[in-house]
Image (cartoon, rainbow, N blue to C red; front, side, top):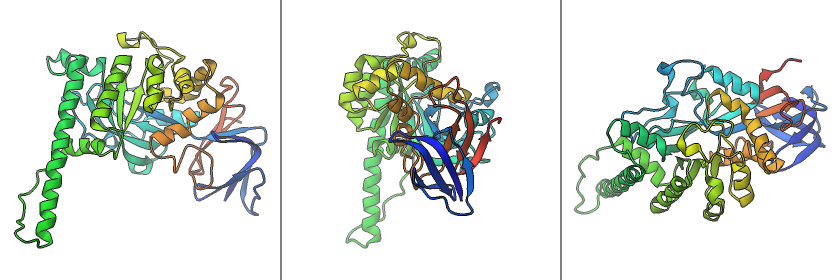
Length: 398
């Protein structure tokens, strides 16, 4: 058993001064100000320190677009066909990517990672811890979502190849086409399964149906139509965001908006529709036309309008700066509590792993970050120690 005592424990739900956390078998078993430490426990005195949940980036490409190497290690966009829902992030993640080491050192213990936005449908995302020798040791949820994209990227990629889509109409039309195909596939599969059930149960006049031909692309899209996984739709401009909402309504998708760069322009609509957003990154240049309205106020304005917000960095090793992104949002008007939630509990909820991570509570994984000062005092709040499932994965200089 391990005990951490004396720290100020910050979670989205509460602040505990002089708190104690008990850890056993990788799980938090108790947290509070009056927790008794059992005899024989390994005690870490964190007096004067701050402890927060392991931070989570809801959307990045770490492990797929490898950091510090060339194109031959860029595995995030299979740009040979615009619709690739059957591709699986776990088949591309490189556990030894140096970026994972950077993330651990920054206190990022869990990420939602997946394909890029070169395709209309890029493939299935995954939620992984930032330590592990193999993807099997790292993954905690797969599939976690279906990466889709609107706007400039897919139309540029395939327009240059003289293929569809080459316009925003083509983006939306092709997505509708494939989602409609998947609806038909599901209906056909349901009929086959009913006929097979009737035959196997000995129903009168029932005949054995012809074998059903599995289509991997449509099987994968079916996961989105049945809401087993959400649609993670990349959209920057406000009009692309509205297209994503229309598609979600047409096909009853569980929509999570990725980037939502101009979301602040229609924050009231997003709040009314109950559409969660994963805004960011903001600490970048306006490198393309659809980023010209990029604003550091976006996350704060969305949050204040009542939109559920999880801050993201989008990048590989740049995920280590997620605390800075949250601090920027605070500077623009987001509350400290909402900012902490946006890099801990809210991403865990959107990724559907909040039963394990995202807060400091009994029964959850002991993913913890110990800092020398308040987490949003970025200049002075050094990460001193990071735990994943109770094991120290980073120890800063004393």
